[in-house]
Length: 106
Image (cartoon, rainbow, N blue to C red):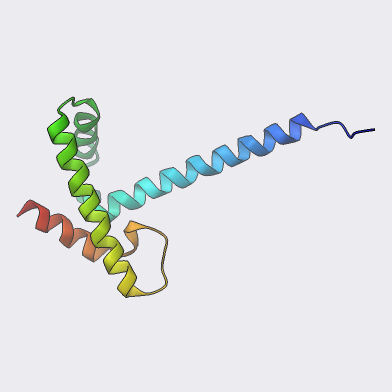
């Protein structure tokens, strides 16, 4: 005879995994804010910029932002590769991330 499934423990495990994934995503978003240098902006200004980006329907602007973001991450990977063994994400080298952002403004 088969052992009955414990749906309660499976559901609890899934809930825990979902909670951990959400926490990791929030942590990574915070690291991204720091890596881009946006942590120096007032919270209200950062929120306004993000809201404007989320609300825009301008495809050309979104594509420009996407390209700039891709360039940022490529530059971060190069800096991280020369730094050694840290493979956590794009925020490992904050100085290079900020200089990449400044170059994009020039």
